[in-house]
Length: 97
Image (tube, rainbow, N blue to C red):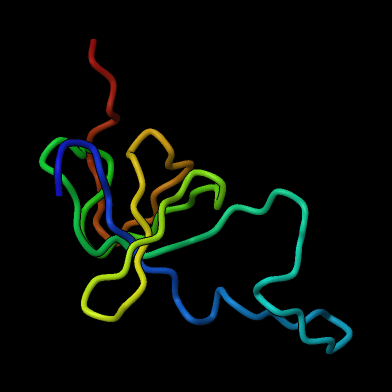
């Protein structure tokens, strides 16, 4: 992985959905702008906001699909991330004063 790129995998549970009324909605159904969660598999040396194993939120419009050894992954830039969900605890505020 180079520079600010992330390789992520969308979980199987993010594909088909079931509505509150019990109707099965396929993954290919057209919806309003909906952000997607995915797990980080690999990242470039310049990525600072995420680590391998984190879950990231991104727009499906900002992605490139790639197949590696028969599995489908998505290639993103770090600037295309909207949120990062991590299990690690960060003690710093992230502010530079």
